[in-house]
Length: 307
Image (cartoon, rainbow, N blue to C red):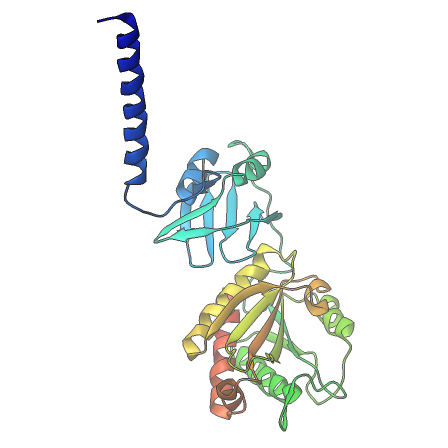
């Protein structure tokens, strides 16, 4: 066999091999493709020398002897290292029970971890979580500010009715409660936050009802500030979990820089009870029995947080 013939055979064999490899790749069974720039939560923990100690629908906690990392896995979730806010987690992918997060979180978290011999800083609270805690309950709007108006229903009235019920239930459990308003009066947003600040409150909870052009939108929503503390998120999570037992649809925990959230020095949460623009929500929100269920759920969530 000539040298030219041997070279031709080798070249043809190489083409067949390459073609076979490509064909094999094309015929591979379809599946979920996760970008290389992501890691699973377990892999993230391993690379950081941490372990997963708690998983929830909304957050994950990683720990070792010296560090605690809190990762919120909802849209626009935030990241905390030893109680300090670091920034946004970024895009989170959930495939079955596996959660994928951006692998750049390793670089974001690693420099902020303490060595094993160091002690994590204590995250101070205004006062211990005890039955002597003080909670400020803020009924939204009031007076010349009616809030959302649908038909003959004013949001300000529903806000006050539910706020009073929450305050009464908390008081019965030995919690010190301050209402920012207990009548149909107008109070500036800055003053509402200042009430909590002057009294060194443990928690500020603002109660509202929502509205939307799309009347099909329904459900309750909880808000915390964009730079909210870990404790604010924990309070929102506790209240949201309790409210889910009322049968209402949840729209999740979101971030918004409302004045009453950003100007309070204590953990602060704003609750949108439902949508007055939605027929079913509006009917429920005006019903005294349903208001009682909402108030009981909110109070239970607050108590769970204060435990």
